[in-house]
Image (cartoon, rainbow, N blue to C red; front, side, top):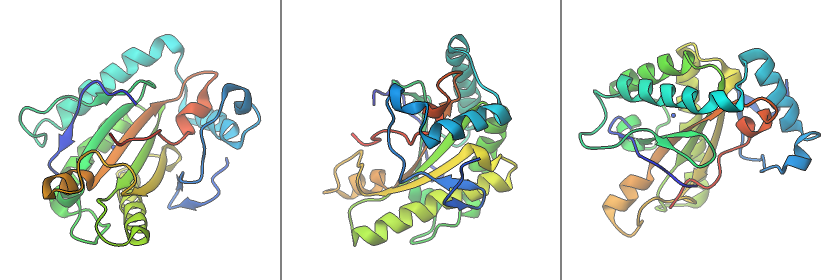
Length: 225
């Protein structure tokens, strides 16, 4: 995935089988080819999402995401670290926000800290104004400890963020969660700083595009480096 910018926040972005709290865990889904898309269950889910939430033409996607990114950056400007860049635009026409886990959660917890809630409230308010998107919340850990525990913790934290968004009025239909544990590091796990960077929540915002609605439902590709 090619990234064009970055936002790291210091405070810490029908067929609904496997639903938790109104949103879906997407860990078992797979990438689709254009030929497979028509008959795949994700295609039906994508069409349903478009019918409820609306969709964008190809020409509308870029300005829609540009406006969304600008509003996200403005809303989060008080909590973003000085000198850090904008929300990342990916090569598949998605937006990516990275949020540090230790600033969002206490150790081994999946409940948002009260000090982090304002950040997520701002984020939710902006997302509600741009309904023609699916919001994927992906939890990550470092490689310390047992992988099974880290995978479960990453999933619980992704669910915790999604649950907070629903509490802020975000439609659960738009939310999908996944815990990827230590599998997708963005820094060297051999150092304390690297492990700290790897403990994060990635929020991937994918547009619902006319004729390709299933793409918004598919889980994001590899998010590591």
